[in-house]
Image (cartoon, rainbow, N blue to C red; front, side, top):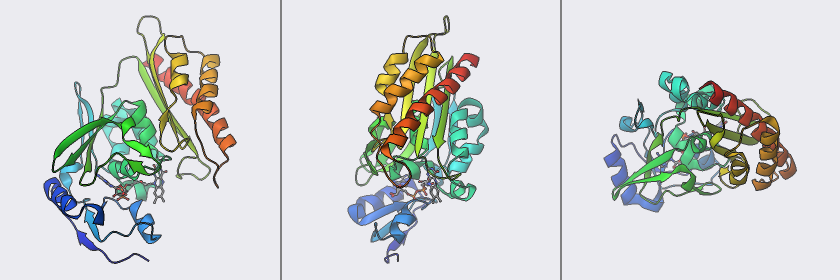
Length: 291
Ligand SMILES: Cc1cc2nc3c(=O)[nH]c(=O)nc-3n(C[C@H](O)[C@H](O)[C@H](O)COP(=O)(O)OP(=O)(O)OC[C@H]3O[C@@H](n4cnc5c(N)ncnc54)[C@H](O)[C@@H]3O)c2cc1C
């Protein structure tokens, strides 16, 4: 049963930040409620004050610029990202990831910001945004902070957000030339969370097709989404081929720190990392060659 709470529905960011500053630890922010309400129903979270930010339209937008890249307001629903023509054209991997996140109903109401702030290591958006080199902008009455998305996730369901702070914007840099990105997750039930998710972005040198840069990100494989940095190191500066990607998968599977739970054993998750890094790496490489 959900405990009684007082509900506020601010219409502006400034109003929301004032409420957050006033109630601090006694309050909880709610956006789409797709994750928070589950916790409230289970009695795991029982705030005295609920600050409902869903109606703050100034945080619901998708803007794209050839110089600055992509900016997504934290309250943008998943479905808007999935259906955005500008994202489909320039950051297809983001739209593809959203298409496999939950059901249409959940995507219509759940927000990208709520997903990231929930801090679930099995969430779909974080690995893709990390592979794309995204940064996050937070806001509080003290001003704004910007951080690499990699610094946002501290532990299981724990983020770098401070009391009084909201996630305001997700910033994705311009997609580099000669680059390709791909994501997939393994899940047993369609639209379910990832048992393991893998995102890869590859950038090739224009002249000889050598791998200039690569980011390999593992989801549901550690307490937070993580980069498989040793696997990346293996690939940088080399001409990518199947055997090298296979070796990268092998290395990534040792970098992962998965747990055993009702969905999969630790060993099975490591095997998934091995297979998916190769498979997603190949897809990212093929896209980079066509870019
Ligand atoms: C049936 C079902 C299936 C799902 N499947 C998937 C899936 O396949 N993949 C996946 O990734 N997710 C999945 N989810 C999770 C869910 O879709 C996301 O977590 C959702 O995007 C959360 O967004 P929300 O706006 O509903 O957040 P809420 O539930 O409102 O909030 C989540 C947390 O973030 C905080 N918060 C929200 N917005 C902000 C903000 N702007 N600043 C600071 N804190 C904030 C809240 O206080 C709360 O702690 C599923 C959920 C359900 C119910």
